[in-house]
Image: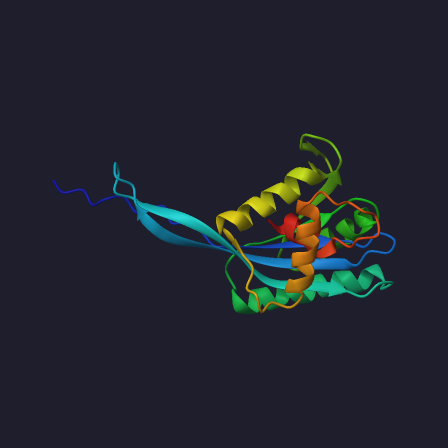
Length: 196
């Protein structure tokens, strides 16, 4: 009796948005990242395809200082709607910086009917991530390190013609060097790390 080979376990594409909310003199930023998968070979033991992920930055938005927080909610809903028009079936996940002024924005975004799963993340100075009833607590250093590592490996790709690419490069170089000077902006880099 012939048994057909099992269906390959095909990973699903997805979208990840990271929202870094302004604190004092910093900008609010939103990064949009698309997860895609490609076959890069076959497993020698099972002959199943080997799927490799790619994270592609599709948009980097930075918003003007002193906007009302409702404007940011509208901007996020607009971005989710534009992703949904481009890709009507893939899941969309929104990671929001719940530190500082983020808590009420997270509540509003959770109540908004926008078709994205909202994940509150509190960025901490600690050494280990943890979970609470209000979301995840993630140390800043691993967030940044993971993003830089994925870029170096070629898994995270930023098209050079993307809007705000030069600003993101400057911010990532400062973060890589360990520069946490309070007057330096890092909003685009943190939004990207949240998405990643």
